[in-house]
Image (cartoon, rainbow, N blue to C red; front, side, top):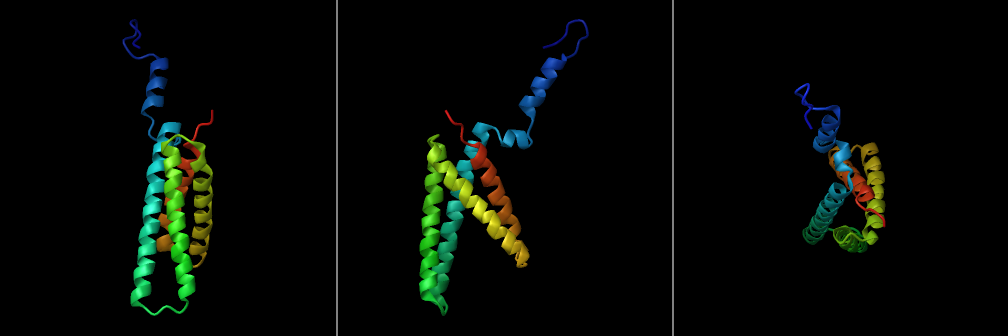
Length: 147
């Protein structure tokens, strides 16, 4: 809206423009943006887990494995986690509540694992993983709107 007497925008229209064009954390945490980000990030995490499982499986074939039972357990656990994250992303895609809790909990666990990676000196892996987990956690937390 333009004030005809002064020839410039009124304060009401400036605040509306600022709210609309704001690209910071507020925009990231709005419901629809957070929901779409949660879908994308959960599917990305699911795909990364599948790649990790493939790496573990292939390296187990070509290298000597001291504990094959533990490796098989890790592969099974990774596959189940990947499927669970993908199902959670489908919950967000369908606007259902069943995907929110597993996504939030899985990423909180990941943040805890990242803490131990930091303390163990594995900073190269811990930093990107913690950023991904934090972004997914916030998207999953704010990407569901109850009835």
